[in-house]
Length: 154
Image (tube, rainbow, N blue to C red):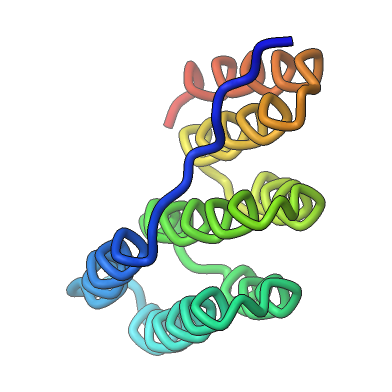
């Protein structure tokens, strides 16, 4: 059975991504969202906590911190930032072969996020995780769901 090699970032790549995402979570917030400013402040702190947990390889502690971001119920305009953070977490889980934690996180994201393009990215990542595990049937199912969600608007 032919499988793709796992995508692995070195520590320097993770540091680079950390700097980029810190900037994403620091973006100017729209005035029409009343409490978005406060919620984004909390989300930025949670994001930094997650990055430190990744750095310290405390992977089992990540999901409760990500749940705090989900529980903020941020407006859909911030979903791209959440997805970016989730992909960093996914990479850390994959590097450590914690497929169970990775899939659980991605499944939670599919439930919590609202935009079709967000769900498409999460299903695509789930497909990749299943592919790395050698479960081609589940991988194909996820890739097909990713295509379906990508075709929805928005």
